[in-house]
Image (spheres, one colour):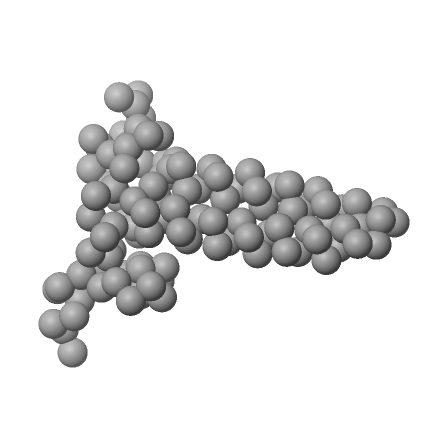
Length: 106
């Protein structure tokens, strides 16, 4: 249980994507400092970070937009509603997942 009254959104998808993107940024930095292949490799690693984050989100290790119930705040909590899609979630829409309520509205 958390001592504060808000959801910081720390998820497995968020942390994994951030870690991989940080490595990609470091590799780009090496490229800027003189290791020429580093720029292309670093950009590819950062693109992989975005894909990794999206895939983990769709697998239920991320969170949809807006606050989550307090029981879902711990880092290892998995979101079992991700399979149906989150309302107002670009990542879920890109994967073709839309909740039933979002499909019915014009």
